[in-house]
Length: 137
Image (cartoon, rainbow, N blue to C red; front, side):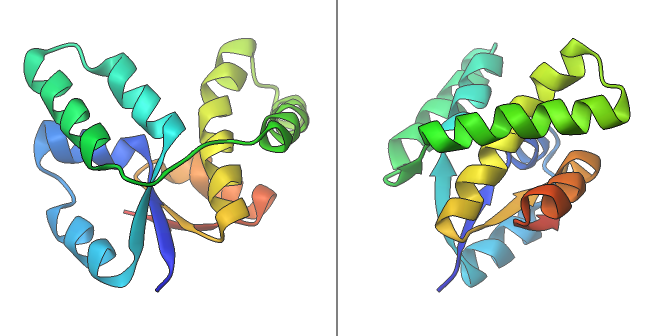
C-alpha cells in the first residue's frame, strides 16, 4: 500500500472548520499515513488554545512513524528555495515560510510518499520542482 503525508493545512482546515472529512477517510483507505516531524512541529507551534493543544498532543501520541528531514534534505531545500525565490522575486519572509513546505515535500519524496495538502499554490509548485506526488484537497 502506498504512503501519504498530510500537510499542516489539511489538519488545520479539518480541526478549525470541519473540512476534508471525506477526504481524510478516502486517504486513510488508499494510503498508509505517515507523519512529518515538520508538520507536527508546525501544529504544535500554532496550538494556542487548550483544545488545539489537546488535538496536537493526541496526534503526536498516535504518530507511531514520524519522518524527519535528513541533512541532505535541508541542503537541497536551501538551494531550491534560493533558486525559486530568485526566479519569483520572493522576499525573505516568503522564503522562510516556504522552507517547511519544501522540507515536507523532500521528506515525502525520499520515502516515495504522496503529500496531501490544501495549499495549492506552494505544493503544485513543489510537485514540479521536487518531483513529488501531491494531491490537493
